Image 1 (cartoon, rainbow, N blue to C red):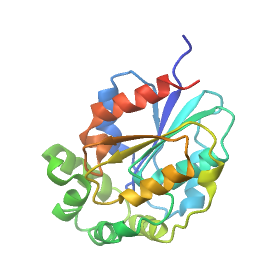
Image 2: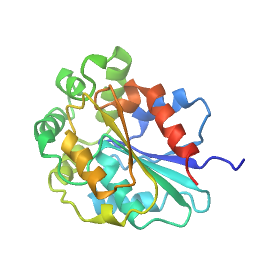
Image 3: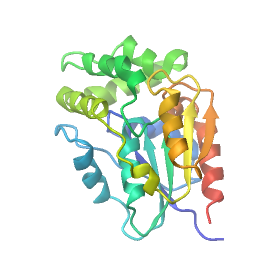
Image 4: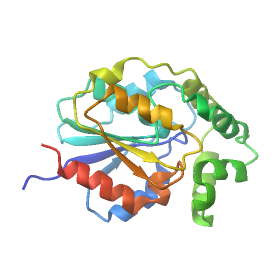
Length: 232
């Protein structure tokens, strides 16, 4: 049986990749992973971040790309014009265009990031709801406070300016969309837009908040592993 492809993880708005820790730990070696983290001091838009990611993708090894939340548009753009060793796309709680229903949550994230102050209850509630634990709150604070507030604000602005580029229609590889039923950040219509454009995409819904990979790691792993096992 051939080796499973590498799972490349693109992070949420913090861009650190540190919040993937619960998901990677729960994998327990079932899949090899590569976490790509973004610059913490340099405000980059989606085009620049896509170029940054492309330079760090595996050169020859077959891989599946997972874009979480903020990174969904980057993953979609890469999947629309993929390298030869690209196998499939996984999208988690994300969007292809400005998720209008998320404006208040995104503004909350940007507002709670002065240098002197770590993210508080409002951000934790938006991202994790009642599933927040002290460990996850602490991890969120560490990740967000390690990134320049200007960078976070620039990323939030990039999301709010995002328009559907039509790249979804160019994706011809297998796709899995993970949707959190209790997502307070990304509305259902954002996932529906992706699923309409990519009729071959598979949908898995999980009873989770926006931080699906962090709070429902084992359920997410089951869905992702099953999807990867089904790849030709």
